[in-house]
Image (tube, rainbow, N blue to C red; front, side):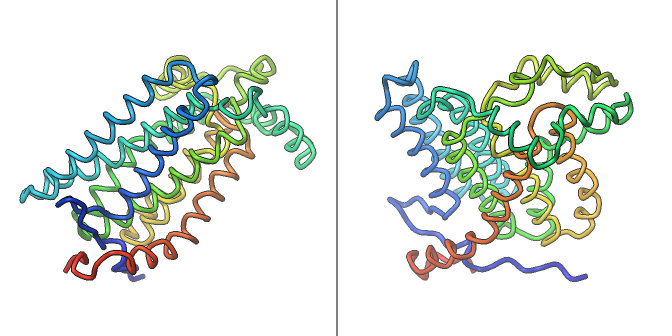
Length: 310
């Protein structure tokens, strides 16, 4: 099967004080502005809001500097690290700010609503039911898929960049950015802490495994914070990754497909998400795929013709 070519609109740039910006930059900047305005408007509800504002300004400054250097560099490796690195680190930053602002509109967690809906739809609580399948080797595989997701961001970026080109990598970064911004912006309207916080006492089968299982427990105890569970950013981004692998590298698609399909299950198996979180994350990715081309066409009309890469 032949790989799909990227839309030319994704690489369209616009000059802004000598700095070439793409739609990806606008999306990420919009996310930071969104998480800047909210603490300012609702400052009484956000503890340490001045620190958030200052951090946002610092992140935008570093992001801009990295991309200016990327545009000026003639070394392909440097351009890759600065562009892909700045964009993808921005994803993680947006998620951390999103988690801090979970209760800016609503003071209570909505986990019980998710639990009730799942009970009505499935007749069971999926994260409890799946305990009957737990085994050390299955746990090892599931947690491997869950943590390997972090490495997929730069790995797939590099594969697309060096196999297909800069424009194709920009396509990948654009759709990831769109899914990330949609997911983080929407999650504060339905704050969900996650199953371990709400129903952790109902789990009676330990997740014993080996190397990756221990990493999973470290993440759970030291990195994973309550909130930002609905929709699952993990599943939204992973869906975009699988789609982009299909577009640009069918070999990597066939390699990644079992990992990402297992990742969907691992978020429930590993007690990080409810099943509805997973479904919502996939919907965010599909929505991003649907509206992405529309935004690109609008951006192409807005940007000057000379901004298009040759």
